Length: 259
Image (tube, rainbow, N blue to C red):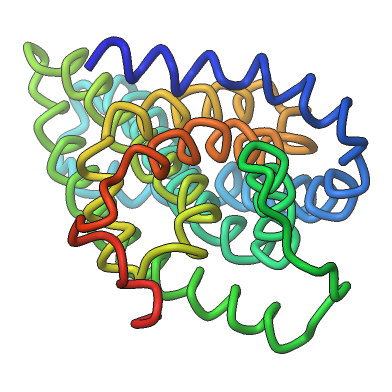
């Protein structure tokens, strides 16, 4: 568990050198700008909507005594809700939007690691659409589950005793699904969505480690520029090692044709 988490997180250091060594900087520009634009737009929307949500929560308090305190608490709860759920939605949208760029980036890194290359056919509209559709399928599956778990944990966190525990668990849930999306850029060439799901479950702490650093980078603000490609390369480095260790008779193998 701890070992997988550390591997998932520490792979980011090697990702920097791989991107530089292979001169993959071109894969950072467009996804980075898309990520920055989407992240900035959602952050602005969350900030604006948090006041309205705070006022709505405050309206449920019918007494004048302590109204000032309730207003302050409601404002903070509204902001927290917008940040948490905004980050959930952002992650899945950006993973879909940048998939036509991240999939070939992951493939180039995997080819470098395995020594097995495929002919470079350049940008293919059909493949880009296929990548987006698979990304949508994974995103819809994951976002419903993530919102379910985060909602329950947020409600539990309103109980003072469980507040800090709930916050940690919410972060880990978000990290898991972020890591899932990053790893799937590699798995899509080998497994169906079902196979990818099983693979990530068996390597959940690797996904959490990858997703943890991904979220921390996003929290810096400027991290929106390079978080997706960096996370993709880091995920590819570790996922490829695990793929090589999957036995040929594993139930994972042979499922790629079901995509």
